[in-house]
Length: 170
Image (cartoon, rainbow, N blue to C red):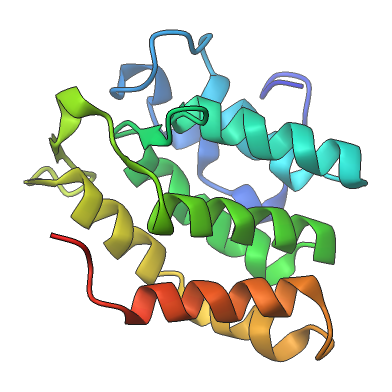
């Protein structure tokens, strides 16, 4: 799946306005890998798709095995908000799993402890990622409120909100 062969979902409007390949990201990414990984998240239909899209997205942002991310995460994470707001339950669960990993256990790739963000200013990458995830608070809370009381998505949303309420690590 790539941008040329997939109609961009309205929830991913603006995906084609970012020069993704010019952003600092893993050297193993093929051209267009980050937007294609976002499209894979939007297209999840079953658990197998969810597993593949989860891994593809985290490897597009960094090294899922090592638990690291690159500055491209600052541009990609905002596109997860609409997936939380309008996606089906399995999409929400996958996105929440990703956000929990990025916030709770992943760290900046060692050569990118500081990075230039979308605003053009330099910041600590880990702080920037946490801020971008926190900017999705409304969508995260909506998942918590709209999902059935015993749903996995609701539990994940509550876990992520708790992570965001904790003080950031030094």
